[in-house]
Image (tube, rainbow, N blue to C red):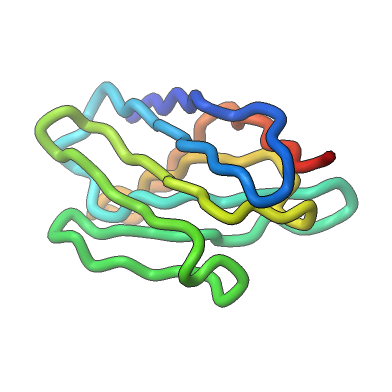
Length: 116
């Protein structure tokens, strides 16, 4: 089992920045890919960015050039640096961990609101 705890959400003005953090605990040695997803009211949960254990990254087209995902394997942490935030980035952001056995784990989510 893997437990994930997100932090760093909040209210920010358009054009502002936030950094989300996700701390993993438990059977972290089995984790391969970690990622950030988001879900806005009335929408499906969507992938924002992901990163493999070796550092290969993948981004949704809507956030390319604005968001950056990173991870610290020694600390079992994954981060999402969000710059140039837009109102359409408003959502609950969830941390996800995918084990090498295919199990998927989720955090409880952190709210990001972009508004003037």
